[in-house]
Length: 240
Ligand SMILES: [Zn+2]
Image (cartoon, rainbow, N blue to C red; front, side, top):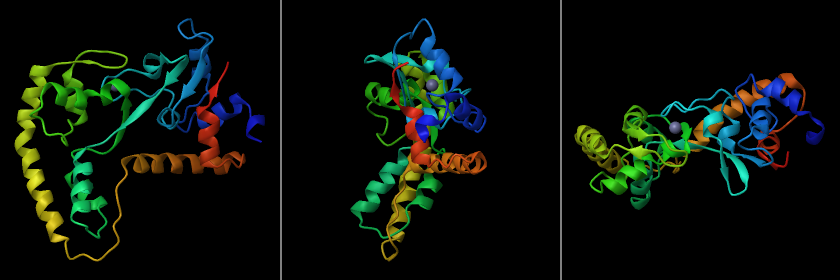
């Protein structure tokens, strides 16, 4: 069934709903361009659930600028960025054997909601921590801070303004330390809780929104595709 659905039909149905795939006109145009001619096309799930006119909210580059050659294929991949304070909260909750739904606590202490950004922007936090070991390993710069730290754009890594990164960390450090104290207190308050432990997965949250968008379009399309089948047919590594 899936193989019988034409690329143009998928593009007509799912493109306007904010999806992309190997079937999109843009993907086919990219694959046929001088820079990538003849390469296999490999998209990831984050690329598929973002619109064809997606622009990275940190660096402002579009999909045509973000696609790159990697290991013999045209690689189109995006990443889920989230505030790593959530990872610290989950770690501490597990150490304390807490029986709670951890999601509201993480949402309370996160500086920002999970979002999809490009690979180079997703490296910014790690690059800064390598340059400045004093930056707490569970600290994440909010998106608007990340944008200011880019000195020069790169496909895989940006050049980072180390001096500014230190300044930004110093501005945030006090607030971050206060959050750590609050987290400690809130988790200890839950020691007697006897609920079920429910973890937090930032990717799941992002994909839930995409699933809802998909379901609305799918019902109207009459194609009877499951979301998994749709992702499968959209990602591929397919020869031209
Ligand atoms: Zn970016």
